[in-house]
Length: 286
Image (cartoon, rainbow, N blue to C red; front, side, top):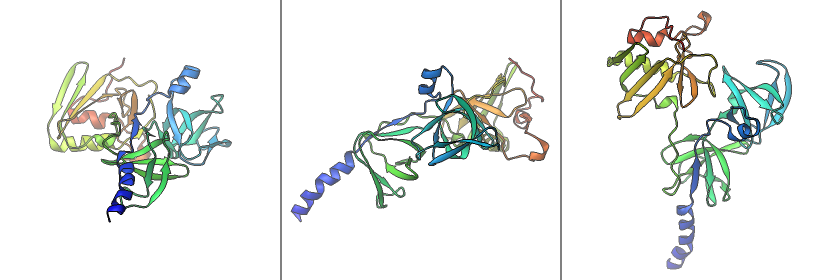
C-alpha cells in the first residue's frame, strides 16, 4: 500500500499543479490592425470549414478552413445571424454565418500539460491531454471550469488556484436582480426603484444581439447606470436616435430583440425610455 501511494503521488501532484494564463478578449483584432490599420473584431471559426457569400443569403464565393477554433477572421460587423468579414489575407470582403463564429473570446493558454474532460466533473472521462503552450478559445466559463474549442470538438478544463485570473468583461447575462437604475440625458437624470419597471428593464437589456463592434451612425447621448443586488454596478451608453442599442467597452448590443412583432419593424428605444418618463421619440444627437 505504501508503495502504491508513492507511485500515485507524482501523478496527483502533476494534476494539482497544472496551470494556465487566461488571456482576456482583445476588443480590436490587434494583429489585423497592426497589419492594415483597420479596426475589426476577432471572430474565431468554430467549424472545420466555413462558406463565404458575396452578400447576406447570397452566392457562395469561397470556403475558409477553420480547423475548429484555430483560425481567426477580422469581423467588420455582425447582425441577424450574419457577419461581414475580411478574408483571403484581407483582400476581399464577404459574409459568413455568425453562428459558426466565436466573437472576441478569452483564450486559455496552458503552462503545463493539461487534461481536457468530457463534462465539468473531475470523474468525467478525459478526452484530450494538451501540451504546454497550447492556446484555445474559451466558449464558456463557470466557477471552476472553462469550456474550450478543440479541433472539431469541445471539452472542459478544470481551473486551478494557479491559473491567472480572467479580467472581467461584459456579457448581457451579467444584468440580473437590478435594484436601482438611473438614466441620464443631457438635460435630466431620472432614477427608478419600482420593481416591475426594473424587471421589464432587465428583460429589455438581456434580450440582445451582439453586433461584434460599433454600430455606425448612432449618437450615444444618454447613459444608464444599474445597481445590482450584490452591489455591483453596470454603466452603459444608450443610442438616442430611436435605435435600441447600448454600448459597453466600445462594443454595441442591440437590445429588446425578439420581444416585439417583427412585422411591425425594428423596435424603438421608447420601450426603454418610457420606463423613466423620458418623452419619446428621443432626439438627442451629437
